[in-house]
Figure 1: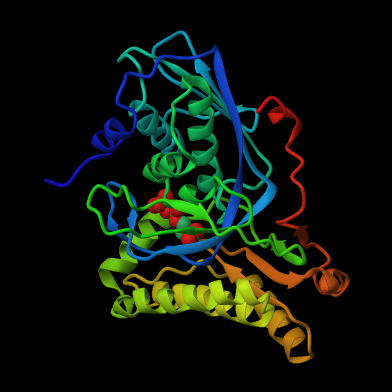
Figure 2: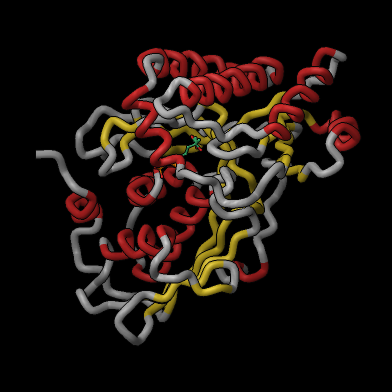
Length: 343
Ligand code: DP6
């Protein structure tokens, strides 16, 4: 019998959680995959078909505070506004909280502040679920390792498993049915010159979630069978590129992997297209700049925005090319947003 989320949680947290304090709070950085997670071998536990590799974005992410509330329904405040109970966002949060209530009548109050656009392909669910799990650990003082917290966050959203570390992180697909070998860990590699540039093309919430999109891809793309090997190759090359500080190899592999993921979506029935005209214009600008000698690459997730990859020495040129770019130095010392100072 396949396991459900609650059974996995009961293995990790075997005593009823008793609050340790009035509220818990934590910050988690968001992460951008260089080798993408796209498709699940188990949708209930968010177990991926392949391993994936990401880079965390330092000060960009979510800060979450969780405590208890009176009343009968959980309160959820996102970026200073109450989230309505009829939204998918609210239901996803409550379903996750259901797994952790010390008693059936426990009501939670969750306040989240993000400094990235929500649901626009900027991995808001990644940092959102990671910050929530970290805040719950603060509240309940669970004696869990980061790897075990990564498993808990994965049950909320797959990419959240990678948001517990700075820098380069790998999430292993694992082979076990209960997913106990499917968690993330740090690759423990610094690359201080590396830069990620966020190109905000359209930050409106996307039409359909990455969850639905990846499921449709697995079910209907005739090319999905090529994906596991594609990612395995990309992972090998990317990890070597990180060790060798070979930026060309890292950038070109990440760009090709993102384009391959979007090609799979194009071959899904019905086709899934996150790319907009402006996205394509920016891609062409990157390709032109590269043809003229600039070491500049992009990656793209389940949304129209692009994330540029380049080295610090080219910052001025990249700004000249894209005036609106928001540049992140993933290996700089993190200054946490003020409201997370107590974390
Ligand atoms: C394109 O982690 O949002 O960003 O596990 O269903 O919540 P669920 O999916 P999610 O998918 C992320 C997809 C991606 C690639 C990646 O981050 O690896």
